[in-house]
Length: 413
Ligand SMILES: *[C@@H]1O[C@H](CO)[C@@H](O)[C@H](O)[C@H]1NC(C)=O
Ligand SMILES: *[C@@H]1O[C@H](CO)[C@@H](O)[C@H](O)[C@H]1NC(C)=O
Ligand SMILES: *[C@@H]1O[C@H](CO)[C@@H](O)[C@H](O)[C@H]1NC(C)=O
Ligand SMILES: *[C@@H]1O[C@H](CO)[C@@H](O)[C@H](O)[C@H]1NC(C)=O
Ligand SMILES: *[C@@H]1O[C@H](CO)[C@@H](O)[C@H](O)[C@H]1NC(C)=O
Ligand SMILES: *[C@@H]1O[C@H](CO)[C@@H](O)[C@H](O)[C@H]1NC(C)=O
Ligand SMILES: *[C@@H]1O[C@H](CO)[C@@H](O)[C@H](O)[C@H]1NC(C)=O
Image (cartoon, rainbow, N blue to C red; front, side):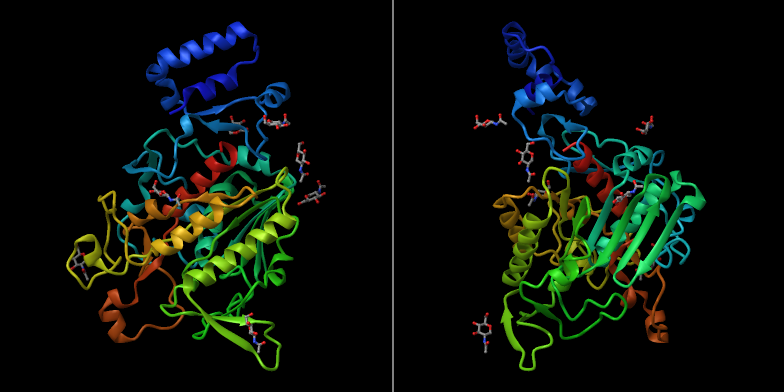
């Protein structure tokens, strides 16, 4: 905790005496400044003069800051039946067809958890405020179906303050756009499961057994992101084929394709670096923000959290309590690649480090409570475990928390 920092920020006059006083207070009362734990997200009017004096580059969209350098991703789940969920499934028409309640999920407990960082409280999500900040702007989620889930969660959190006749949701191939007319603002999703060009890019038919990613090729997708003000990327699941990645050098149109095999981590690193290069060239760090969501965990092996073997996320109704829990489906190697690539970068990209906090939520998956695209066989029906989806998440639910964290990082970095 660094209380001197927030104190310094609130101070407008800056003669020497004040400075002495502040240093004195900071040194002698550092342990007593408990208010910074109670009200950790200060909305501080940034005076240009004080900013210059601070010699701190201004972060676009920021209106305040997290005091004490609190790590919002380090915390625990607390039961909250009063303020969670943030909306009801029936109040958000955009969740369909992945509506868990409508598809018969019997328990609701998974909706009543609030994320509590150890060092502070998360700011309250204020939809009107967010629309005002997004006025005349575009925010886009780019990635796979998990990022699509986060997109839908964001729309669910935001749409209720927009009147019925002033909003729309439209789909154009890989791009889905939610528009709020009065704000001339949009929240969008673009399907690109590898970020790079691949043979799984079709927004509808993309379940291809032999996946091929084209090295260094991002522009075919990225031309649809140009001009966006806030970009939120993710990519993970599609890389985890259990074998080396098939990489195409050159183009899909080449008559004689140059195909090479690459270790998953190397291929993943290559993709992140290509994305970073694009961001550096195309995103103005003074006006735009770029965020990257870390891996979304899955829960397919009950023995990993100490249950009888043979189970999975089906029938799970409570989070995992072991704070060190980390399932085998989340690659520590990939997490290190993310950490390494992003810590070395010159362009500011915010990591939404949601992996650890989502590891605990074996109860939050869609499981069997979603639309089935192919009819289930009698054998499957007799054994729900066999077709439970332990990758995706019910809404309202876990991904609303990811967006609360996004909100915190965007406005109170
Ligand atoms: C910020 O501080 C650095 C190091 O003291 C200095 O080189 C730089 O010119 C300063 N920038 C501004 C805008 O004052
Ligand atoms: C992500 O957050 C967890 C929990 O605070 C932490 O243990 C981990 O080191 C973080 N990882 C990165 C890459 O920041
Ligand atoms: C939400 O934000 C709006 C616009 O900034 C503000 O007028 C309103 O008071 C906020 N609501 C709450 C509950 O803080
Ligand atoms: C609406 O927002 C777009 C950017 O998304 C901007 O180019 C355009 O000028 C805005 N239109 C109005 C009327 O403000
Ligand atoms: C295929 O791509 C690799 C990696 O870029 C390159 O080293 C190799 O020369 C290429 N082979 C052909 C036949 O073009
Ligand atoms: C960002 O703003 C700073 C200070 O206003 C300026 O010096 C810098 O050139 C700007 N960067 C870009 C890429 O426009
Ligand atoms: C699911 O939970 C219920 C109630 O706890 C239990 O009766 C049932 O056997 C469980 N089913 C499976 C497949 O674990």
